[in-house]
Figure 1 (cartoon, rainbow, N blue to C red):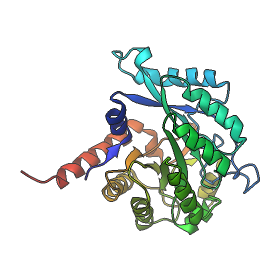
Figure 2 (cartoon, rainbow, N blue to C red; figure 1 turned 135 degrees about the vertical axis):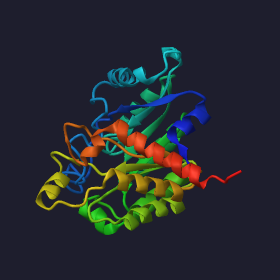
Figure 3 (cartoon, one colour; figure 1 turned 180 degrees about the horizontal axis):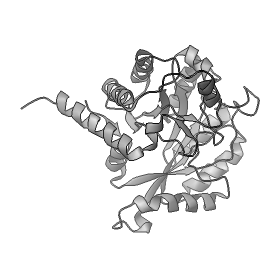
Figure 4 (cartoon, helix red, strand yellow; figure 1 turned 180 degrees about the vertical axis):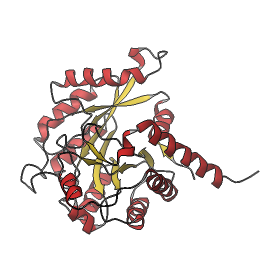
Length: 307
């Protein structure tokens, strides 16, 4: 079992350590403002899945704030002028708004010499032809990644979490993005209520067949957070919460399914501890990452041919 992590990709492409800066574009979401629905997806917090992003202020202030948060992770041997970043517009739907305003915002970030490219989180039903043209134009200057929240291919689950679009919408948008030569990163949530391990693996297998070499996948553990519709649902009728052992097994199985030519951007995620209801074990990030990484190493060792 071999896979390419985002860290591996950055090192092989840029030959240096690269960190992502979480920024805000000031966009809303059609699943919140009434165009599709209100309240957002059932799992989504008030921060729009960007609880660790910089607050929406002047972009220079955001960049400064975000760099201060990650600069401590760099080796002291790397001077500030040599540090490199990828800007990540994470919260809400970052192609949902005035295309020209967003173009100006994204161009401003790309002007920074230490910014290698942009990763733009959005929905597949929120990329107009004008916005697609802007993304393609920016991509000719520096790499642009478009992150799509698919979460699951099971339509029953998609309705339950109030995703707001059906699978053919994702497929058509993916086709358009690839025709524009854009890199696509797809988010999957493992542990959605009512889904079996087989259902989750079906979503992984779908992406293994669908995505092109160089595209990415983010595997996300389901978090039940305070203030969400999912929290209300869990309180009224508790559903199964994955154990660390179950989640670890699912991640290892997913990495076996996904081809090596895809980039694995994430193997888990962490919600704010102040909002976390379940799974409580996910609050110990160090333990979670150590468990996952050890299980992956063991799987690689077991599957490696013996001398």
